[in-house]
Image (cartoon, rainbow, N blue to C red; front, side, top):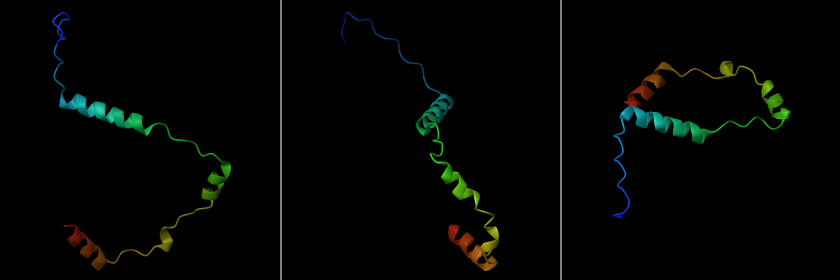
Length: 72
């Protein structure tokens, strides 16, 4: 340290709450604004999609139980 310059005061302690808030704001800043679709054709191509839930078979109970057991 240079003896001619005064020593800077110590930084205050950082609380956990302020650290989490600062990291959340940083993540939002990195995300940035979403870009709008460039062409109206892109919107029209999605307009024709309907409800697809009827074309998918439900998972059988035995298969669902096997999946749950594997996750445990």
